[in-house]
Length: 237
Ligand code: BEZ
Image 1: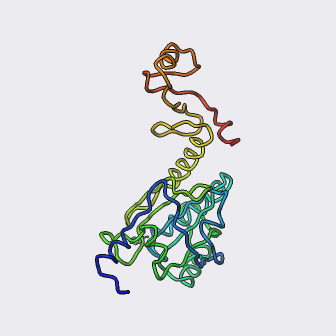
Image 2: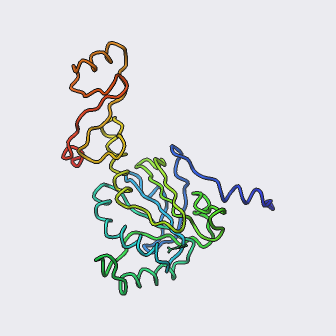
Image 3: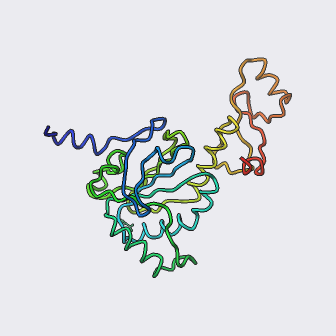
């Protein structure tokens, strides 16, 4: 059946949302075929796209992300990259990075996580990575955080010209894991070891107890109470 231009456009800009199941796909990668998200059950995944191989911002991003890969893996998180380039381009680019590029003290960087080839843009379209206002032919810099049950928990989009902050991606991952584990919320700029926010009190009585300091909490007001969780406790989990 033929599709209209408008239908095509809708497909290109359809964005999965926070709380949705991650769209499933099978793909060829630099590390063999993957069946996503089935194969990653029980692990967090950061699925991210970049506009093109052999480009400078993307090269700086891949080197930075690769240098941090162990930290993500230690936090039970796997990395998966994607661009609409083909497998041989990916392989040649990653080899060039390893053999030739020295950047900010990083040298001989081997990208060990899978990089998806997506010449047909099938996966990129499922994840709203093709955003025609920015480019019809390249993926924007999208980042999807997908939890161990295959649910999309957060996403970030950056334009072609701006490299991402990978410390922030790590911070957001640990924040989501901490929120899940301890049933808390995290305040602005939270880092492990900082105070966390406890859920609202269930009744006026409980709120009053909190305000009087009976719960070992620090309350700025009845709706804004915090407690301590040590960095060690967060790292243990
Ligand atoms: C880059 O990675 O340098 C880049 C890629 C596409 C457009 C602009 C910059």
